[in-house]
Amino acid sequence: MTARKGIEAFSLSTIRRSREDAGIFLALGVSLLAYFYSPNLWLSAVAALAFGGLAWRRLDLALLYVVFTIPFYRYPKEINLGELGLTNFLNRTVPLEFSLAEVTVLICLVVWLAQWLRGRRGHEPFTNWEKDPFHQGAVAFLGVATLSLLASQYLKFSLREYRTVILEPLVFFFLLTIVLKGQRKIWRFLDAFLALSLLVSCIALLQYFFMGEAVTTGGVRRMLAIYYSPNALALFLGRGMPIALVLALLAPTEVGRGKRWFYVITSLAILVALYFTYSRGAWLAVGSALLLVGIVRRPKRTLVWGSMAAIAIVVAVPFLPWDRLLSTAPVEQRLNLWQASVKMVRDHPILGVGLDNFLYQYPKYRLESAWAEPNISHPHNILLDFWTRLGILGVTVMLWLQATFWSAATRLYRQWGSQGMGVITLALMASMVDFIVHGLIDNSFFLIDLAFVFWLIMALTRAVARLEKGEGSFAEAQ
Image 1 (cartoon, one colour):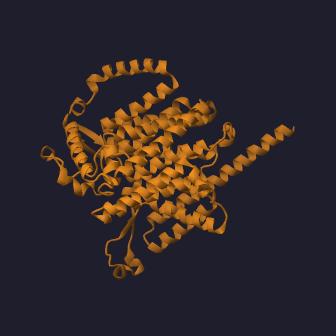
Image 2 (cartoon, helix red, strand yellow; image 1 turned 30 degrees about the horizontal axis):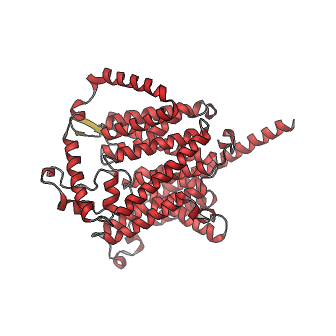
Image 3 (cartoon, rainbow, N blue to C red; image 1 turned 60 degrees about the vertical axis):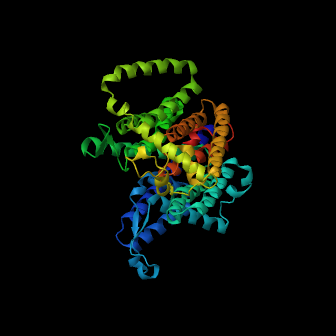
């Protein structure tokens, strides 16, 4: 009888907790939408204050909205200074623009600072930070990015990228290290990211098939969704595809049929959307990520599945976009770009040319054969991108962060195996493979959404690393 009463009490407390979480989460969403759509600046301010008040109560749920708003940076909220009477004072007639992700993360930062000053919570992340390799890498990255500002010829553009791609994603990471405690929250943030990936995929499919929104290049119609280019969409979806597929195939049975179907549907939606981006880099990166999963899980079966995949490709040969696949123009463009970038690195080896300054330095180094694309904003290679923006120290800290991640992830996978946290670790490893492989031929980090996703992956890995083996049952985690 005692055991039964204990189970009943646990179930009731779980239901009450879930209802309370759902209520606060919904209220946070309503207040954020009210902030974004309010036509009056003062009403937006009231809605932002309401969001902050709710975040004071549940900072972890507020940070979920940073995840949900990551890819919508191209649709910022305009702040008209004329409504405050500050147009003449600040000598600015153009409205200020802030994305929902940066507003959300800054509100959460203010809330945490207020809680910290009040002594409520928040001391842990900065206690013995020098012993935490994840925090060490993040602080080093911030320091190197700050130092690179000295090399910037166009400081205005560097400061904008410093704010949106360096500083705010790092704030997000540090706040996540505060709230990501326990399996329940790890699953919650991972599911939120996959829900976002599903949403973006559905938007892309809807626009492509029913609204005719696409761009035609290389003889094919390529999917765009909310992005400015198919490659940008492919970069974002590529981070989520390996995670969704790993969880669809390997998530423990305790997750339940509903969540497993969610992972399956998400995988299929991303897969279809990725195909219609016709991004060869995304296909290669996702394939490499899945190859890692196969090698880690079942080396012999990987050979079998690889053979089956090869057969499927042969069968699909008549239906593949060969004009796009066999086009050598992108390869030639990459080679020309890399040669110019290497010359730029030779001239600026220590500090690089500064954040978001590649576009303005590139014409000096562009080869004559690269006349077709005179304006390019990054080198399309992860090593050259970090080097040209941040100098040799940027490359060093990037390698440091990778070493930190892979050292922790391999240890965690050996520790947890096929348990829930082991499967999550494997999914995060697969996503990081996509980051590296796709980054070798395209962008890797220096876009707003990619920076936020990178630090989300790092924070989730750190959270798993801080769990003790066997800590909490799966039921408690849900």
